[in-house]
Length: 239
Length: 284
Image (cartoon, rainbow over all chains, first blue to last red; front, side, top):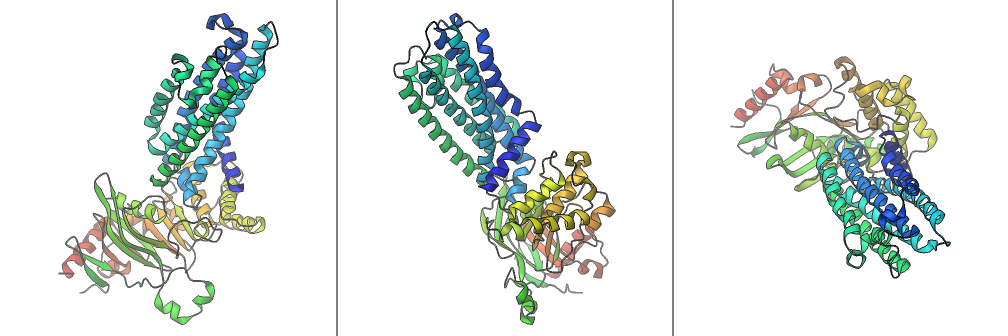
């Protein structure tokens, strides 16, 4: 546990030093704050629905960027020998992988949470009656689950491919999936993407809290499966 | 004149010649070293048996068997050049193998126990593998924490290696300020922090000037085994006492370095090629 804490701290420091922390943390945060500048009518929704829709756009972009950066990071760590330095000291490769996942999860989670507060403040300042925060909060939590699955997918790709192909493939995979949340009806969306779908269709969702819980569970399960696959891939790869 | 080294059959039409090192035991506790019989048995620190590794259709290691005795300083030279590097990475557990068995210091594969792999085996690759924003002290403390030393012991070890590897004045500055030479010194110092029984050096310290490199690579410890992969054998003169030559993934020569001198050959690529040819001729 102490080792994982040390590795995660190093991963966070590396993200900070390499400026990768800025998009992962800053993009959802600043995007959420800026939603007050976008009229909800542009999305054709109510105040809460509009805030949800525009925040879903921000979250989708953040997820794609985080997924690409996760792939870039993992491939880069393999290339420059930092994982080899750890592995030569019998630090399990899966520990290194999980520490990177935690670092991305902490930043992206914090960014999405802070950004969602900004979007919510924009919604309640426009709403005529005090809106119910629970469906919105549940949808944001489910979208955070989707984000974790995106990061895990990026790490999996980065564990297998060189830097540039890994980054491009992660973006190529995550972008259409994120776009599906806006283009496909909520009922037809794969469960792990349900968080983004719920934020997009917050006004029309029938049982948003139950749907968000289901979606979050599916997204976290997907993240776990992808991490296990990434661990196996990293274990088999040459360092 | 016959080579005063053991011949052990052929591999791929080439003679395979090895030093007399018996694969009897491996990591040996201090108390046992007092025993005359253990010293006589010449225990092995590195054992590879039938190791095969292909990469992009090329056999980098082909049914390779190599035994390195405790205390040896072995230079590994290969054609194609990536074979030697691959051998060290396989030994360090950084690259997989298609078949074969590897044991280092009595350990078959990296384990996470405090007194296990992390303390007994050291590896330094061509890339330092260290974040340039870290200070040498942070790197050494991290290496010490991974090996689970207590604070006092860790500090004593950091003081010792930072003095030996000339990083004392840079100890609290980011490594990026000292550039690649400092990064490579720190990588070697962090590997030596645990005083490993087996040290694997894959083209180490290439950014350090030749004289300083020779000083740093004069690894102390009579019972410490060093395996050094190099593309420039001439630069390793004085640092090694055995040489292993690989051709197309096979071990063709493993002999004391004195064998080159006896035949008037230099420790250079040309001298090694001549030794391989002589060994092949003498093997019939």
